[in-house]
Length: 279
Image (cartoon, rainbow, N blue to C red):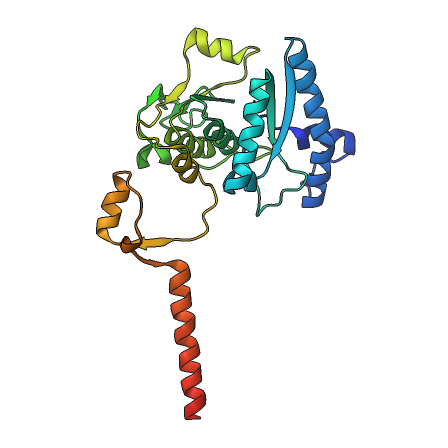
């Protein structure tokens, strides 16, 4: 279960309502709210004879391979022990540069991390539409998305204002991560008292079908990366091989951004040295 709300829960208790929060205030509110959120989930799950376990993640815990494997082992152990992991972003230490910013992609990364086969995103809308149904009365509901084409991604639009940092755009980004990892994903309404039961009863949602070429766990982890750190330029033969799912061989690499920067810097130093000698 990926759940947000820590900062919102603490706003009233700390007297931080009615205005935009500074980063340090958000972090302080998260520290207080995370306790309230964990207590709420623990109490709710205890009524069903279930034990809650809390796990706070940052992008580094999913992007760094060693930390990713450690978090995966933690989650799998909790599940083996019959616990329900309650996951949230660690906003108490996160900054704008090192955070997911939305629970949609965090949930998709956790789906990939534990090898789940289904991800359900509960929202204030019952799926993907051809346009925003709140603005366009002719918008049509899309029950199934077989492939995340450019036209589908364009339906995401911009995230809504307010406390939420998500919106349909981040849900489609989450769908890319989840489906590439071999999981199917649903966007459904979370406004009813029993949203999952409602989904099972009515079937009203948008399903995104899993990719049939997810590959091994390490490739799924690479494909789900949120923060990229560089570029590699390959030749046409390597590009064709990568599209077929093959590995990248050194012979196919033509350059990387780091290598290009070194070439440019070396060229600059050489020109500077020549000017110095001439002078």
